Image 1 (spheres, rainbow, N blue to C red):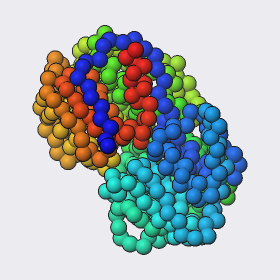
Image 2 (image 1 turned 60 degrees about the horizontal axis):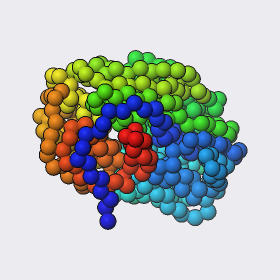
Image 3 (image 1 turned 45 degrees about the vertical axis):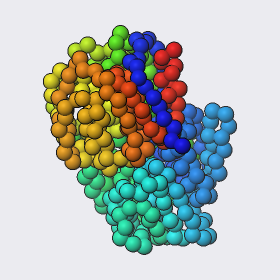
Image 4 (image 1 turned 90 degrees about the vertical axis):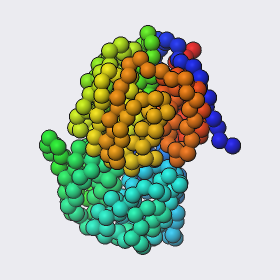
Amino acid sequence: MTKLLKINRFINPFKKTIFVEGDKSLSIRWVLISSLSKRKSIAFNLLKSEDVMSAIKCIKILGSKVNFKKDRCEIIGTGLKYNIKKKITLNAGNSGTVARLILGLLVNSQKKIKLIGDKSLSKRDFSRVTEPLKRFGAKFDSERKTLPINILGIERPKSINYQELRGSAQCKTAVMLAALKSHGSTFIKAKKSRDHTELLFDYLKLPIKIKKKQDYDFIKIQGTKKIKSLNYRIPGDISSSAFFLVLTLLSKKSRLLIRNVNVNPSRTGVIKILKKMGAPIKILNQKKYKGEMIADILVKSATNLKGINCPEKHNSSAIDEFLVIFLVAAKSKGISYFKNLSELNQKESPRLKWASKILNLIGIKNVVTNSSIKIYGNPHHTTTNTIIIKDYLKDHRIFMMSTVAALTFGGKWKINDLNSINTSFPSFLKTLRNIEK
């Protein structure tokens, strides 16, 4: 039976300090990159979400050894080549990151490997990854654009030239991982997107060179023969933090300090956008850790939010946070306009459509297209409507957006598929309860 969250109250004022779970993007990348080293890698604060567990299950099937000890995870990988003796099946679950990145790892597999995922993931486009991987020499047994997909690698992958024009870190990283296994130098022209993989490659002293331009990064990667171990303490996830930033902004007389959050500049679009809207947010105690920027984030209730014409340059660095940014726009004075966001419909659910639907249920006027949304804000708006959220393909961010909306706009809410949060933020409701104590 579907677990249901019922909310029919506003959140009370609060003054709290919290930590959020480990960054999902970094957790998945740590798992996959550690599987390429024959030495032991150790991570602390690894996010134990369903997406990360899917990555771990995949690398174990590929031959890595994984061990959990209290608050740490240890991985001894296979090196850059797999010793697979029969056809195997890998299940990426709900994770587009795991599915697309692991295809890059399989570019030199010598046995056919089948990749599958859940119902939601199986609706998403994989041609954006399979097309460049074909150029390395990998073979796919059909012209399917969606899962399931069968891949057969090549013993000596060729280096390629590749242009990533969508701003997709998943596509870029899949090619970067394949490039490590290739012979020669791979050149990548990539539209700006999160750069966790580049920072990890650089920290591990892998053969990578990067030139950053205004709109694109130019990356050169040479194939390599071995990778050293990667010991890492995963910082908090800014995407998970965003829900509590917005909860605080839209609550009365509240203050929240979120400690030890990853504030990588390629991920802080949410903070830049919210500040443009008048949000009182401060970044404190900033420091560098193995290439990543880590900081505490202080946020207070907002009293004078304003609508904006959101600059497109922030799109890629806020792609996972737009759902809650839209809630802030709904409580702002004036009209907010967000455009060129078609990538939102390539996520776990068609998020632009769902954002519009939820705003309509609340009573906020909006106009949505396949790539944009215009929101007519109302700072004093609340609702008494009965609102039921269901059939959203168990998208974890739709669930959390709905929870924040319920606590800040009012109404009687029934939000289905509570377990959807296990994909990225299993302790979301526990953290929420700690704030409310």
